[in-house]
Length: 182
Image 1 (spheres, helix red, strand yellow):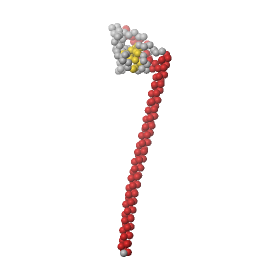
Image 2 (tube, rainbow, N blue to C red; image 1 turned 90 degrees about the vertical axis):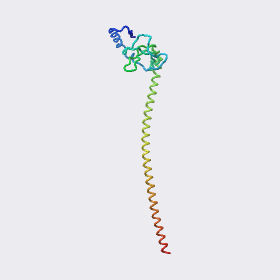
Image 3 (tube, helix red, strand yellow; image 1 turned 180 degrees about the horizontal axis):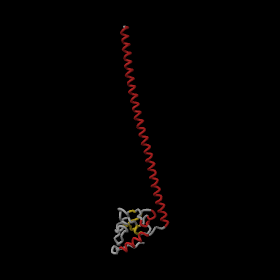
């Protein structure tokens, strides 16, 4: 466990010794896990003169919400912008091994379910794209069909008009022949 210098005891020798101790520790110890809000354990640490490693600011109180550390309280860097110093000190001891296994299993199930949702969403998006293309194709076919039917009706209307003209001519000729015969 690193020793935390008081703000009154800052000297170059202390800083060098402190940074040597910092660099020799495992980096995973300092990585900040995801957190969850717990009103009973939040805010900045004001009870001690402890400072975060890089920013030399008061650390914050957090509750981990990631992996086998879920639910463990820790003191960590309160900086949200830029580089975060990570966990400075765990308040709670590590969970028993059996609980760590259970947490690992739960998180694995959670990530697997999320992966399944992502894959389902991707498959759904592909299917939606196929349906949109099919809808566009059907819309084009429908438009072509409407045009063809319109042309057919126009042709039939033209034929009726032509047939009417031919019929009226025939009637007129018959009337003329009837008048001639009378």
